[in-house]
Length: 386
Image (cartoon, rainbow, N blue to C red; front, side, top):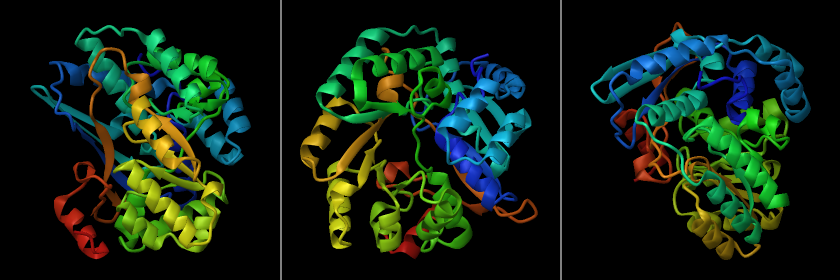
């Protein structure tokens, strides 16, 4: 088995699962695999992938994992953690086919259940792909140590966010260990729950785009950001206070991010677009609302490397607290080209009896838009975007 542990998943999937169960237990959704890099998959890949997914039905939360979650994830109520203890993956929710080198995959079912598939599926696809094409990782230890020391020298607070497109669990495991050993206080944790438990560090995560996408589809694009944020606050009461801004573009987000929410949330996450422009927009927004920017945080998480982080830190120059969520650059810098793929929410309905509604994500970069083209155009028209 490639996926062996229940908590070999990112924190944000468990937190949004908790929110879904509390507020939208009847929601029914579909996720689709999008191969942005157009990689050709080896013949027989779908069959091997199906075997791995079928084996995931045997994965159960251990007592050690439950103890860790109860200790570290104080924002998850004990009823929900008890539910996780009995949760089992249902492979029938995942639909796979292959046409030549093209992989087709979608997930469908109740949102509160299917939400956990995205991250382990992507990790599984990535690791299986590199196994089947016969690659070997190179320079894992040397690169991880050099990056850890460089980030420490930059005095950059950062976390490891690389589960979804990692080379393998073994590589990600080794990297997290070395980052913790060599970056000291500047290494803040990892998004991967299992590795946070194994290496005794903090599980890190923010809210996902799919949370906003669901609210946009069901309640309208003008109301999406506020509706999603108010619902998040209702569940977490101020915990997990970093919000994404780019589901329907950052400009649109800041128009709806009112003073109450701006004061309540700890900060924002930059996940697409020009990070320097984003920095200025964010600082100016806080100043315009009479909020001290140094009391807030920006989490940068889009295609980061050492040069990019150094450039951002130099530009900020202490004007706002900055921290960095670094993904593939840490978990899959081993001499291969990482897969460029996502699994995104594409259709939603608030009850299985109803018809599907398209779910879209606009982003601050045109190429990252996902969803039905007509629905994307409708959202842009509604929000007054070009």
